Image 1: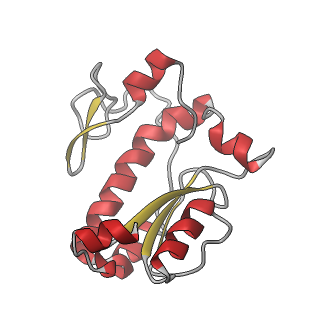
Image 2 (image 1 turned 45 degrees about the vertical axis):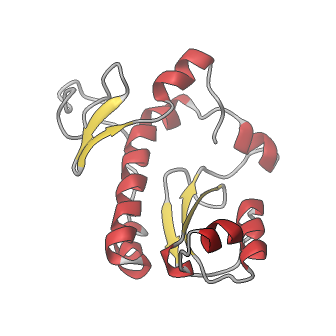
Image 3 (image 1 turned 30 degrees about the horizontal axis):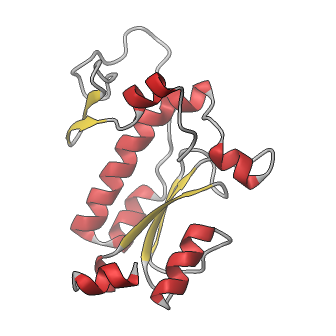
Length: 165
């Protein structure tokens, strides 16, 4: 990470680390401007390599493990979690865009309080092509900020899933 930042001459304030976190409930988003790794090995590695805890991060909750951490992180998402995944991915993408436009503090004010809602159970929900509607067969769905390809949904189903990562 340090070498990549140095080779492109990117200041540390322009780095956002996005990481999964089982210390947060599934679907919770949390921005921080700095802080410890909190036991997250990926964050620990980045902090060690950079030599500072002063880097912005967005943690995305994957839920608390009912078993060992490694088994949890590598396991498949539940059916309910998979149904909510497109909403979570859209929100995370919008949160990253907010960070890029406004900085960590303002993005945190908006997104740290955000709650992932369960998908609508009624048949009168948004239709394909409408904001918040389901993805088409190519994995593309419309969000408030534009069209997004939901990465992994089509390929993961064909491959039998790749776990939580």
